[in-house]
Every structure is written in C-alpha cells, then in structure tokens.
Length: 350
Image (cartoon, rainbow, N blue to C red; front, side, top):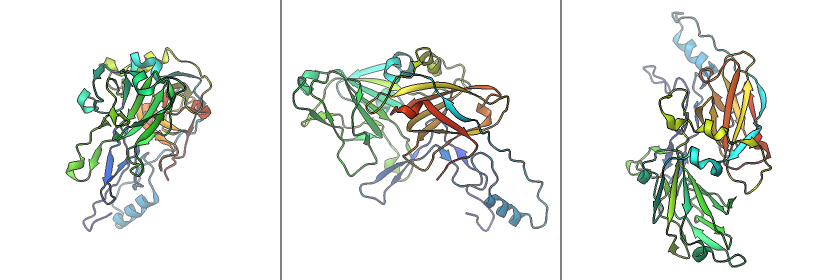
C-alpha cells in the first residue's frame, strides 16, 4: 500500500534463503492453524524478487515523476534459460549420517530441538528401546503409534521403509497416528522444522520443534531414544572457517549411480552439475517433490512442488559461476523424477 506520505511496503521482493522462511499462526481458526512461509519473499512487489521492474513499479514511478526529475530507469537483465539438468548420482541420507549429522544425544523420552541446542533443519529420532516388546514378532498384529504433537512434519520409517501417512502439524483435523508392521526391528522418525513462528500473539512465538509429547503405543510411551541433529545449513562459500558446513563434499564422495526408487524409499541426496556456457546471471530452479536445494554449497531453500504456490526457486547471479556449477538436492520422497531438475528463465509463483 502507498500512504499519503508516499511510503511503500514492500517496494522490493526478497528471498528466505536456507531455512529462514519463518511461519505465521492463524488464530482465526480453532484450533489455531500453523502456516509456514514459502522460500520466496516476492509478495508481488513492484521490484520483483529477481530485480524485474513490474507494471506496478512503472505506475508508481510515473506517479512520482510527473515533473521529470527522477534519474533514468535501471536496466534489468533477463534470466538464464539453461534447460533440463540430470543429477546422475545419489546416496541415501541415512547412509551418510556420520558425515551430515551433529553429535548424537540419547534420552529416555524424545527431546525437542531446543533441548539439544538445535535451531533449524531436521531432527532424526531413532528408537533404541525394546522393539519386540512394542512391535511383537513378524506375522503378528501391527502396532499403532501416536505422535500427538508433531512440530512440524514427521516421516516414520520402519526397517528402512517410509510409512504412510506423513504427519503434519497444520493438519488439525486428524490424530497423529501411523501403523507400524509387526516384527519391526528398526524405527526412525524424521521431523522437519518447517519454519519458526515469527508473527502473531506472543504466546505462540515460543515455537518448540520436534516431537513435543513423545511417542506412545496403546497409551504407553516408548522409552529409549537417540537424537541425531541434521542442521544441513551448509553455506561454506561464505563461511569457510566453519568445518561443520562441509558435509556436502563428504556425502558426495559416497554417491553412486541412481538406484530405482519409488513409494517407501528413504530420503536421498542427488548430485549433479550444470554449465552456463561462460555466461553469468541468475536463473530459476524447478524440482519435483519436496526437499532442499544447494547451489555451489549454498543452501538456497526448500521446494515443495505440490504443497504451495511456489514452483521455482530463485538462484541469484551471486551464487552462479560463469561455467561449471554444482547442484545438490535432498529429496524427502524420492521418485523417478528426482534425478531431473529444470533451470529456466521464468519464475513460477502462483
């Protein structure tokens, strides 16, 4: 909006790089509904996220330039159209925990991110209690687990296979239940911090992340957990003094040719390269599924192709090399399309 004094909010769009997207809380609904913010902070501003001067900008400029006193317009350069890129190699997230994860913590009951001094990213819970007492023997009755408070998104894995449903904090209409097969000998729960609440009533700003109320079966809590923090915040190009930002190189060394994937597959890191042909500029990356993107070691942000209005991620020219560039994608739900991305000149923001 433009006030009578001429202020504009917001004049120029931006980007919530990495895991800095944040979230809102909608207290008009009952119960209050958690609403994570997307990576883009474009907001249809007069100057778009990537620097384009929109029709709205020209209208405002014309209004302010009736006497012709404004300087010439800035020149806006168009984005690079690179096309489809194949990511030929990958490795399962759980196979590289020793190089991508922080220090492990064990406790009787599940802890939150804050209790293990973690701010962002993912937290992997591994049940280290008595599996046979909880899940019985193979061929018996399955066990229903209750994850009553998930902040913000949980994938449950039994014997390495991803189970349905995925549990979402914002889905307040259903209990957080998942059925685990009898005879399960390995149980893991991967919880994603989808953004901390940064707007709304003050009582909601203490936004704890992880499994807030433990895990139970038949009303009995599961006892014995190992916590593995996955900050995944690598930005080593800009913070070279931090060795803990170098996990991508270590994980890449274990990547192999992509195996067949499908429903139930574990999360995977996909690795590939693209060449700009000597050009320097910005582009927009489109990937299918849900996950996180790094370009030349920088955490660009999250993507979720069918989970919201944003279909492409803005890759600024400051991250791009005039030649070979590396792209790494963490796919939370690998599919046959996970090994393909597209680098295009058009942003897709619905």
